[in-house]
Image (cartoon, rainbow, N blue to C red; front, side, top):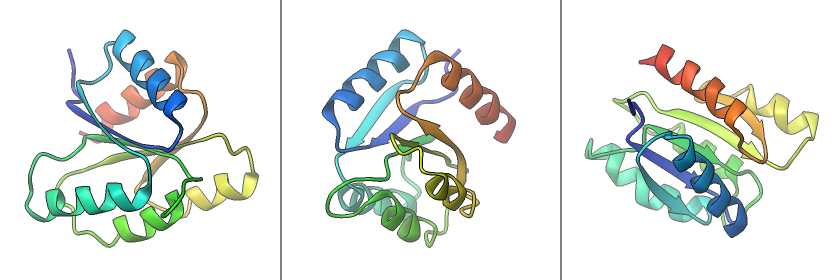
Length: 134
C-alpha cells in the first residue's frame, strides 16, 4: 500500500536522479515524482502550491550542493512558508562533512540526513518515520 503519493527530488545530478527514481520504483515506494535541478527552480514551483494548498509533495529529497540556489538556501526560504500539511524532508547528499550533518539537525523540518546513494535500508527508515508522522 502506497502512503506516499508525490515525491520531490531536488538535485542537479542526473545519475542520482535516475538511480533514486529506479530504486524508489523497484521498492514500490511512492507514486509520482517532481524533479528540480536547483533549489530556486524548486522553491519557485513549490511555493504557490503550498500557498494555494494544492497537491504538494509528501516527501522531499534535497541535495545540498547545487548551482543557483543550494540546499541550505532552499531550506532558509522553505521554512518561512506557512505549511498546512506535514512535509517529510530529507537531506540526501554526498557530503560526509560532520558540519553539514550537525547543521541539518538545526532545521526542525528536516527528518534526516542520508548520505548518497539512497538504498533499501534508507527507504525502510524513511517509511517508518513517515508513517509515524501521519
